[in-house]
Length: 279
Image (cartoon, rainbow, N blue to C red):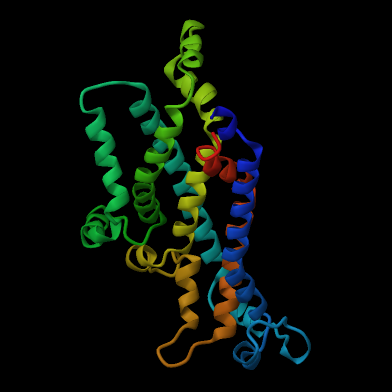
């Protein structure tokens, strides 16, 4: 039974399936990118053909660069996403380590309480969150978005990381304590390096919803100086007329950073997803 569980064919099949699913998921991205280099007529006439000949056009990218402060929107999205991910991983890992390592009264209830955040959407509390941000003077600030996204991502981070941290050898941690390492040193030097695949998994699962979110930027930070890329792209979508060239160009530029970060985390992500399946 153990040999079957550790069969390399299982690992190869899991990796192959993930690659196939990735290609299927990236197909809409491919369609958006090729259509961003087309004329409006070619977008609707031949959406799946490459942008060659008379169909090729850069009008969408020219419009994006001229209308609105695209680079400011990009900077805001990048800051909010990176800082939110940092806090999600830091606080989520610390909470997961405490729940998995220490036994105290209410440990299980605390874990269940944090897990409720996965089942209950944070958008239900939008009105209360808006009132809180207004009272604290954080409306129209990037800090408001960072706080909301951090709170949104923590339940999933704690849920995933706690399961991985329970698998870290107790002998390793006890050896560190015998050598005089503090709990913080054990956490940062021994535990975190061993759960990097899980950290990458949490980062990817939270990165895309944060980067693509429109709801909270529209409510908490609609000001021109705090607009995110997704919100700034809405300027090209009108009630009666939509500039599809500009919309597709803006979406293509917004997709690139996510793809780069996905490639960076992909190896650790695949290890994190498949580790439980191939053990």
